[in-house]
Image (tube, rainbow, N blue to C red; front, side):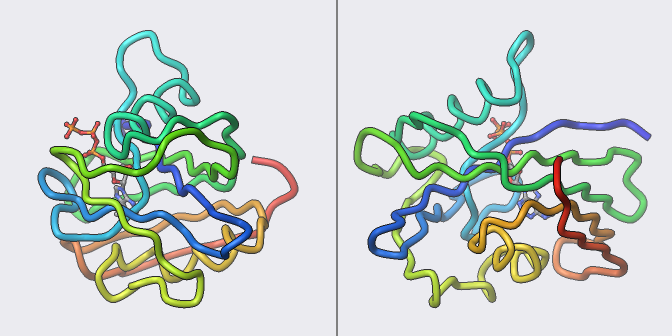
Length: 157
Ligand SMILES: CNc1ncnc2c1ncn2[C@@H]1O[C@H](COP(=O)(O)OP(=O)(O)OP(=O)(O)O)[C@@H](O)[C@H]1O
């Protein structure tokens, strides 16, 4: 199977127990709230790509990336597997601003809009918020239905 490496970054305001999400305005996952991220550019490390995408999509500059999890997504009938590296950021510079790709908004940790997000998010977000490292795999049919899944807390990624 072809593998496409992607990044996904959740910025956390620990003091106020909020998470920054972005409404994706175009492309893959348009119309859904999600973290910030995307594909690697040639020569980039996963961490470099994660920081660049966060900056490009929200104007937030990450000072430190904390590994949070790793998720593999398969879409039924699609030979390409998505290998998503999930990070959280607690130290950052700049204020979130709307960009061509994303409209950012802070959400209280208890009010994450899971019904307007990817269907997998409701399963692993709680682990991410509790700072438990996780590995997961989801098989999707189309963009809304999960046919199969696995999720484990792990000691290391
Ligand atoms: C299927 N369930 C899913 N659940 C949660 N998050 C998911 C996801 N599937 C993809 N994602 C994330 O969505 C972003 C897409 O990024 P995507 O727009 O493709 O990348 P990039 O900005 O490089 O593309 P363009 O520059 O527009 O081509 C990227 O963070 C990726 O991790």
